Image 1 (cartoon, rainbow, N blue to C red):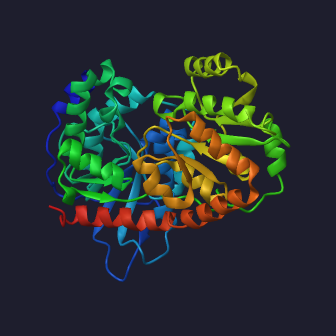
Image 2: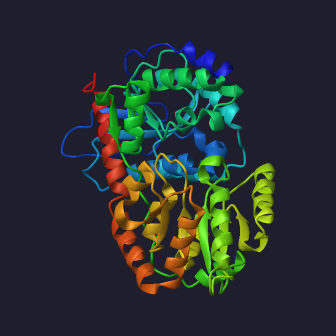
Length: 433
């Protein structure tokens, strides 16, 4: 409830006199398109000092910052700097070297809990932005709205409205239950000057559930790093798989948490059916993801109750350097979520030439098109049929792998950087007002 109360007192943003950015000596990610740069944007990367660093939101913020920094010269007429850290009084480390900021935050042993980070943002970020004289602020994580006048427009990324759509599973006492969650999201996105939606599905939810004006929303799909995620086998791929207990094994891979929407019980139930099929008794579900002790115990208990504890291999957190090798060696990525806002793992798998079994739900359909084998996530038998088809039929497997690889090329980091920077430019010059 405290989060709801704090957000309720947020002041509307008004433009203040522009000042020069702090740390003027730092290198700046400035890319010109034949015109003078008119807009200076700040992107808040402090979320990378929280557990979100290893989740989809963290990947989005880090990839976006580096993509802007590395973008093709002449494509982004915006100066972009990163808020790396800040104090309560408004003093901050603001970096022009966006990739450097990402690297430093990723290696910094200091960590804030999500709550510590959120309250620091709410109470301290406005002073940072005012002191910077920036033309626009981008909040890649929407969970904390600064209290007080920013002096510039604020762009917020909406990844999904899952907590609002499924309050029985995701709206607890900290959010003020169902009522508080709705009020929180309405305040959060209603107070933003512009919203970046990561999919058309999420954009439609903003309009339909929160009555956000469509003109206030721009859809910018995530980009995939095709250097990290590539179909080209690496010399140490088999060594990586051996390290995770997957050497010479047939497996389907799942990447993610163990909450309700990820459909862990559906995947395990499907594996029970798969194991009964001819020549499929050795197939395992390799689960990659940082899962807390309670959820891990629940997943293992589910597998034991269904009589297939040996069909489940819990890998824990897998770094990107290893994840690509696991994807290249998998029969398929199993991504049968009940609901998603986007779905990073599906695009990353496709970029690695890994066939994808996805759910026939709006966001997954939007992202994967016909390049994934889509099934009803509530039907373990349908999931099992798809697993067997890809494990048992090389031609079918090749068809989905090739179509997925082709599909993944639509989701480039350069495109994400250009489209996001255009939102900065328009918001910063008042074109969207």
